Length: 252
Image 1: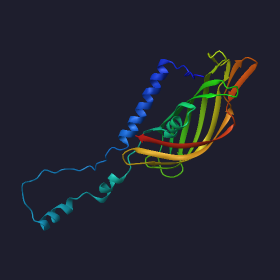
Image 2 (image 1 turned 135 degrees about the vertical axis):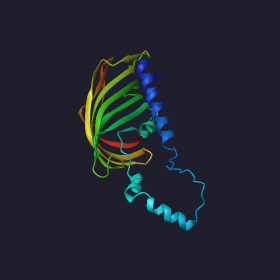
Image 3 (image 1 turned 45 degrees about the vertical axis):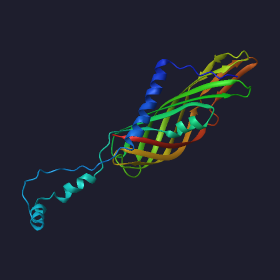
Image 4 (image 1 turned 60 degrees about the vertical axis):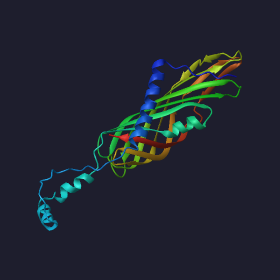
């Protein structure tokens, strides 16, 4: 049976393509950008000095130790744009996954705390127990905070990350005629939890993280379809689910 794609509005397609390409471009280009040390060139005076004389003249006017060490102080960051390659890997390796993307934006509100939005889009196409093709999509919009247990927002460290997501499901199901019909009713979901993350920021702003935690469905999402003899429903299986976070990003 031929699978149909879940209909998407034109602005949704444009936004999805734009966000994906922007994230891939930033990560692939900026992550491998060469970081060159800053140097200062002094004009030549046209005079020739002996080695001993040059040392005796330069040392008294060299920069004080405090100024010399200023270059080692990490640059203050104001925001971090991050995406999760594990979602792209799922999209490639899992034949039932059509699209899977996630992007986060952290706004720095202190040396130890960030706060920002996160968006997850996941679309699948699979056969249910009645051998009917079911195309379903989940759009999750949430907010998350990073609390640095060690380190800070400029260098990284171990993070405690609470999160809260609102889930909007959408879907369609094939009938015996071969046509697809949309859901007859749905319930939006809400999940929340926390993760423990190790986060590291390089000097040029490229950063990566790895960690995991738990997320609890306070209100499970559901979709219902009317088909012949009764009603078929799909929803989140267990209320408590493990989470894995592997992300790469760019801090500004």
